[in-house]
Amino acid sequence: MSAIDMKTPILIVDDYKTMLRIIRNLLKQLGFDNVDEATDGSTALQKLREKAYGLVISDWNMEPMTGLELLKEVRADTQLKELPFIMITAESKSENVVAAKQAGVSNYIVKPFNADTLKTKLTAVVGDF
Amino acid sequence: MSARFDERDIGKRVEAIAKGGDGVEPEQILEVVKSVMASIDGDLSTVNLKFYAEIESLAKFIENLKLELAAVRPDEINDEHLPAAADELEAIVGATEQATNTIFEAVEAIEELTAKMNKKVAPQVSDAVTRVYEACGFQDITGQRITKVVTALKHIETKVEALLEAFGEEIRQLPGQERPDNPEPPDGSEMHGPQLERDANNQDDIDAILASLD
Image 1 (cartoon, each protein chain N blue to C red):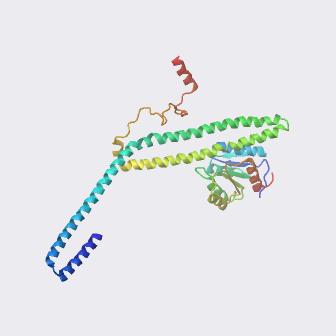
Image 2: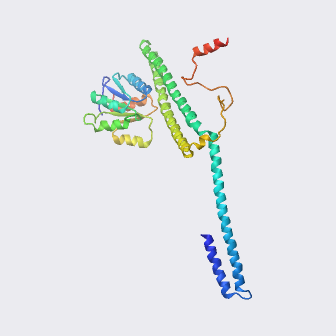
């Protein structure tokens, strides 16, 4: 578990701007103000290699690079492999969860979700904040 | 296969009669049997004829099927109905996204105001704002579901296209149901529901139409 503080940069990744806005606002309510956005996996990967983030919160179903592919890239990168990675997705089938777990996901939130779930999962991944 | 078996069986019987017949001239029996065999041959030809009749019936069935398919106008389905359905669905996604953004702007403004509210009211308002944020997730979920429906429509479009290709231009040239220039909805009402933005009249257009009728 890697602790983060309210100033730790967080990258949120989703191809739906509405969802980015929801997550950003909910994080803001929890006290996290330093939030960047990306709308697909490849853009996210580029941002992760350019800046030191403390957490990634990513959707699964995106093009050209999916959230799962992004997760695998992150875990295969020596500089990023320890980065906490939460998947927030509508993919709720068991095989999806298993695939994400096998790829090294830190936690998994299924859409639709509420603020309490986000807070609980954040705490489970990065500790109390 | 069974006709050959029967033929062999009768042949054996004929041979038996020919060898041991009593009171009846074997030659006569043979002649009778041969005529029976000949009649069986005739029946086999009838079977063939029946087979041909079945094929003819099948051909008629296919021909009727073509006519029925032409009446359904698969070309229209692919050229008009499916693209129109996809447009409507995309319009739903666009409209819900726009509405969600408007809700966000309003709620974010309310959240800003919580800083100026008293300590008893502010947390209650903030909780309500959080619930609105959570509820706005519907736009993402419905968007993904609609995308799946659009994908299914595209799949159907591909299948209909394959059908059209299989029958070639033939099906396009068959007389389909005559289509009115401005088809009415199935319930016969004059209502067409919300229009796509590109087709819709805005309020200024409506006012202009009303003014033109005064």
